[in-house]
Amino acid sequence: MKTSRVTIHTLRDMKRRGERIAMLTCYDASFARLLDESHVDVLLVGDSLGMVIQGHDTTLPVTLDEMIYHCRAVARGAGRAHVVGDMPFMSYQTSIEQALANAGRLVKEGGAHSVKLEGGAQHVELVARLVACGIPVMGHIGLTPQSFHQLGGFKIQGRDSGAAERLLADARALEQAGAYAIVLEGIPAEIAAEITEAISIPTIGIGAGAGCDGQVLVLYDLLGMNDSFKPRFVRTYEKLATRIRTAVDAYVADVRDGAFPSEAESFFMAPDKRPAQKAASVASLTDYVGGCAPGSDDAPPGDDATPYGSPKKP
Image (cartoon, rainbow, N blue to C red):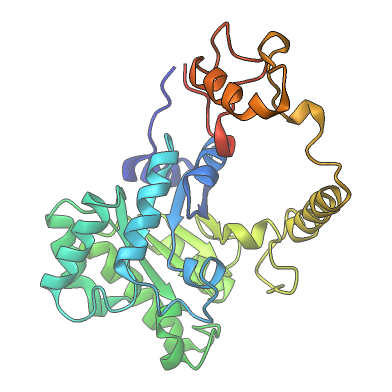
């Protein structure tokens, strides 16, 4: 039975029904399949990969080609979720023409279903042009990580009345320009709730309180992949950093002790094919392996050695 794809219209309907939207960042096909199975509605291929995958201090070094690469991987693994590709720093700020071409690459080459860009009223013309070209746009206002240096760091926005009014104006401008949703990041919960009530398109919050139409977290934060990173807005649902270290420690110990691999995890020649003399063993093994296909009647038990956990082909 084929699962229906989540689209921008699905998300709008969810807001109208009062159904909360679950969104997570995702950077590869394996996690995309897992998140799809858990019915995550939106997978954001975020430029946060610059920090959690590449090890940078900010998202600024991420390139468009890198975003396309990760979008393509996520799109392959996601059968249900809506896939959003982040427009990286300086891929849309220099000119509308360049932004149109770059967004087109994220969709055409990366397989993204929509793009996300940071900023409010200053980008309304670009948003309108993208939508006119058939590229859905998710906005992003409040704490915008690509403005790290201008903001003086990752700091909460909208804490005074003037800033709050500007955020509401930005949200309305993006809605009018044709954006289908807006990420509200790092703003007071009261302001986020006010914006959510004031516009007809979904709001997705991160560090913006419970009054938004949905929530997003960086997947690695949710899973506790970095146990030294504990911001207030993150809820850690698992402690994978500890569990991964424990598993790898056990693997290293087994290798050192010679306990891995065991006989059950090894391949052997069929008894009737074993050479009579050790001197002939290499040639005989080559002849034997070359003469039978994995999974055939002549192959030794357990010969179907599909690598890297990939699905076995029929």
